[in-house]
Image (tube, rainbow, N blue to C red):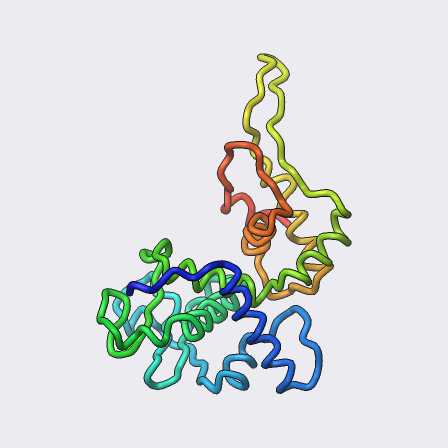
Length: 232
């Protein structure tokens, strides 16, 4: 599905507005962990279901689907078996992003990932603009900027956390090191604890910290997610 460009600032604002709407309904200030399931059902008035989407859509890489016409968000029940709470909750928040940002475009055109008023989210389309926008919305919803910055101040202090290249002891040259396995998982875990982000994965936390410019990777090393997720 083709969707218009939306700035990060606008996406973040929509996520903030949704939290404010929940606060007004609940009557108290909402802090992490953000109750995504309650937001789906109480604020948006949608039904949240868990089904075997592999059987429904005949594909193993479908994580969630938003049924716009019927007002249903459906999550692949297999995430309970094979994934962490963080991935499950992020998928819920991702589908909320589709509802907030994209439901108005579903009936405009029929595309490969929209059928009968449904937005289907699969791993093969992860880099598409519509999926990036929903991912960013989910990050902003689960990890509000103010709460992230407050937790970072507590964990790391006023200085940014920078991963630099290290000098090779033998050749005397600067080489990229693998910084993530030894340092970043601990920072992410500390952030989740300090800020109350108990339903957020370390992977999502690190991406959010980088996006906000709080963690800076000056090496050319790409993130080793398998190694990252096996630590801490």
